[in-house]
Length: 193
Image 1 (cartoon, rainbow, N blue to C red):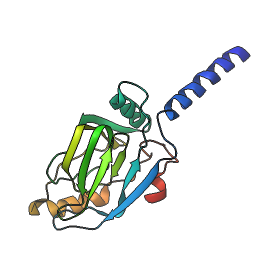
Image 2: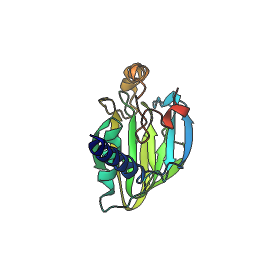
Image 3: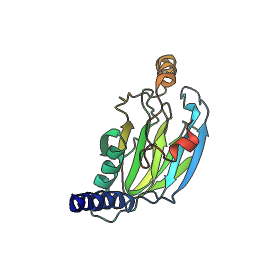
């Protein structure tokens, strides 16, 4: 019995350290509060979060690494691609974007807003309603996207006939139960409360 307990302890410790070896726990978190911008509602209650260099890739499949970390923290529905080169937002779900290749300049919050640069290893968490658009990119830019707690995303483009329903939807989107990287006690909850 003692040997079996020891084997289980070693197994769980190796899983824990294996996961943490791929996450930079000292990552800098930048927050960006965005007000409504014309027909782009953004989210005045919750800021965009940018975790710089959060992922440490020590394998040949960084996209799978991000997918596993997201899934362990109940951010599901993952996909791999880039970011569209037009303004759009989701009114029914928060979104996490983990950069596994290249870099991009992304405009957050709609037209006339400044751009932010995201690079391989970064994570962007967009609260429901946040407009985003890729302005420029390079080096094979690609992200893994995911949504918390089985939230289903929609697509909105800043059209007048979307605005009222989108604002109603945004108000109903619940807080995630977990940070996409750090789980229940994650950094997200220092900014989203």
